[in-house]
Each structure stands twice: as C-alpha cells, then as structure tokens.
Amino acid sequence: MKKQEILSAGLLLLAAMIWGVAFVAQDAAAGLIEPFTLNAVRSFIAAAALVPVAGVTRGMRGLPLLERDNKGRRDLMLAGGCCGALLAVAVNFQQFGIAMYPDGAAAAGRAGFLTALYIVFVPLIGLFFGRKPSVSVFVAVGIATVGLYLLCLSGGIGALYLGDVVVLCCAVAFAMQILCVDRFIDRVDGVKLSSVMFLVCGTLSAILMVLFEHPSLSALIASWRPILYLALLSSAGGYTLQIIGQKYARSPAVASILMSMESVFAVLGGVVLAGERMLPREVLGCAVMLVAIIIAQLPSKPLHSHPQ
Image (cartoon, rainbow, N blue to C red):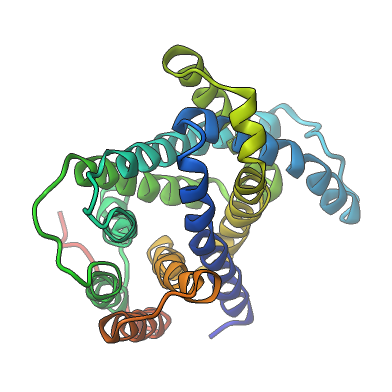
C-alpha cells in the first residue's frame, strides 16, 4: 500500500471517529433546537472557523487566500455549491428522519445503519459516472453491510417506519456528496472547498429555518456545547478530513467504507462516554466491519463493463 493511501485511511478513520462521537452531541441538541436551525448555525460556525485555517495552510505554501484567476474562483464556487447543496439535503434529511421515529423504535440504531448504507450507494451510483470499483471493493461493501446490521440493529429491523424512508434518502444524498467531492478535489483547495461547502449548506438551511421554524436565542444558548462540537469538530474538522483524505483514497467506494466506521465509533463512544455495554452481536459487527476495511484495501483488478 502506498504511503498516501495509508495517510488517506488514517484521515478518513479519524473523521469517522469524530462523526461517531457526534451522535451523542446530535442527540443532546435534538431536544433543544429544531433541525434547520441546528444545521444552519453549525454550518456557519464551521465555515467561519475554516477561513483562517485556509489562510494559514495556503500561506505555508506561498499561496494567497483568494484565488487570483477567474477559473480558480469558478471551480471553487461550483464545487462548494454542489457539495454544499448535497450536504444540506443529507444532514437535514438525517435530522428530520431521526425525529420521526416513534418511541421505542431504536431510532439511533436504525438511523445509524440506514445512514451508513451510503457504502452501498457510492459504488452503485458511481457506475453511472464511469467509476468501476474493484471486485474486492464490492465484496467489502457486502461484508460491511452485514457488519452494520449486526452492529446497529441487534433487535432486528422490524416494521418499516416513515423515518426509515427519510434517513434512507439521507444515505443517498451522502453518497452523492462523496462522489461530488471526488469529482472536484483535484481542482480546488480542500480546506477552502470545505469552508464554501458549509457556507452553502448553512445558507440553504437558514432559508428553510426562516420559512418553517421558530429559532430561539435561549435554545441556542442552552445547547451551545453540542453546537460547538458539531460545528468545530464534526463539521469543520470531520468533513475537511474527509475532503483531504478522499484526495489520496484509492476510490470513493473505499473512502465510503472507511467513513462508515462512524457507526463502530458511535457504539464505542456510548461505552466510553455513557457507560453502555456492548452486546456480543455488536462486538461481532465491529469485527466484521474491520474485515471489510481490510478487504477494501487489498489490490484487485477493476471491474470492466461489456463493450458497447
């Protein structure tokens, strides 16, 4: 394995760890602040926090913060607009889907499993854009899906809820966001792309917030701790790690498998932070996920389509 691929795997796993712990912060904020309001505020804070980071990282390479040529500015705006719009769809579908589950429906487990199904949608959607994953990646996707089921749905999936359908839409949007990042990452600066992406996500969420919600300053103040975690670590940190890590990943499908480890870290976070105990089935799910990641990293020939 190349050094760049090892670095990519480390960055994407770190992003997954941050996102896994973020489920705790998301759940804490959900009872205090409405979904569009939460995603608007966290996205604006993330966008602002990344501006000085972009200035420092580009300054270290002797580059100005602002693009000097029109093509560079157009590429950044196009990339940030597309990735930001898809991210806004994904995070808001996820938040609303979780809120739609009835009591006793194991919302966190079901939402975690269905969200992580972007590992299936990434290679499937990628096929329509000429991205042909290797055989090992398809095998790894299947194994990872089994691992996610064992990890997140220890009691079985049971009846279908409206929240399931909404969260599944979120998984499709996340898959498209991953493929969108893959399309633009070689053309723009990763940190700047992340900042513009969150600016777009925040703007779209804020418009929907004004139209459909009733934001409260007292609610924002009461939930400042989870908001800051979601804004600075989960959004600014996690998605920037995703963008930089994807640049050196073998394929977006491999990147999606690594990032789906957020479900594993969510369970481990519950054990460490909330004193929860892991069931044997959940331990097995973690082990199966690890096997999937190892298989995804193995060299294999890409699948070839039949001649036209």
